Amino acid sequence: MPCTRQELEQRERQILAPYAQFSADTRGRAHEEAPPEWRTHYQRDRDRVIHSRAFRRLEYKTQVFLNGTGDHLRTRLTHTMEVAAISRNIARALQLNEDLTETIALAHDLGHSPFGHKGEEALNRLMKEHGGFEHNRQSLRVVELLEQKYPRFPGLNLTWEVREGLVKHLTSFDHPGQRKGFTSRSPGLEAQVANLADEVTYYSHDVDDGLTAGLITEKQLDRSVLIWHQAAQAVKREHGELPDECRRYFIIRCLIDREVKDVVQTTEECLHAAGVKSADEVRRQSRPLVQYSPKLRQLNLELRDYLYRDLYYNPEVHEPNRRAVRMLEELFHHYLEHHGEVGDQARKRAPKDGWHRTVCDYLAGMTDRYAMLEHQRLFGMRV
Image (cartoon, rainbow, N blue to C red):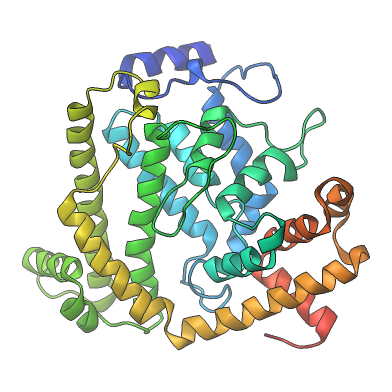
């Protein structure tokens, strides 16, 4: 006999902590649907995210390096998959709902613009008088409106808990605003885990990509970043001299292991101190309970400062992204003047949303390579 949704829900009751979010207790969806037979509600949500067009387009969107500049460098999609994996590991250790945590992680960048955070900043400037642009809000817009897959409703009709995780995705890069219907002081623990897993992932893997691209070196890191130095020493003590690629991999692995262990241990202490007994009690907390220890937070700030100084603003990263942003601005103004060149689906929303938001949606949904091809078609030049 196949395992039913009810049996899966019962398993959650047996193994998850009382402050986890149980799929049987979901606050539901904006549009009523029959429940799944052999999946929980959050498992259905995960599958809907993976099968969305916005998810597939992440393969061709920039993480740090302009998409297409290196076969081994991370894209927005590989970053997302890594966030999902780390999220599941932390959630499992804390006895939280892995399916919900993974779904939030997989969906957290669906609304990201092409050309990384520089592209996001450009769209926000262009939309300054028309509501701005922020990729967390855009991710919510994707799953609530822009995906068109189902006959009875727009978007993916995800559960409230997943959408809460998108509304309240908070990292050092991301600072979401308030949204009607999601007014709690803190999100659920699963959303908090996805937030911190995002930071763990991009701190460690941006370093990895910078090393792969030859823009930073292990010597620089060893001299400037204490957490790297400590991980490198630990790897050397355990394994001796290793080939370059293997050594770098194990140092990055050591960094991630340390971050994950610290988050799990610190969060357990915070949960015990707060005495929370349910997900709703978690939401009433004045600050997140999923945290780094103060010591590791300080070490991460040192790593972040190094990445900004020596990687993100390195001319080989910054200049291609700056040129790509200029191209995005030119496309934005062109489409505002030539409505007929905006895609059919986007054009249908213009009477309700206005042309600035319509053009913004159209550009935000583009991959790096499609935006570059469109620019070449319209202006006859490459970035």
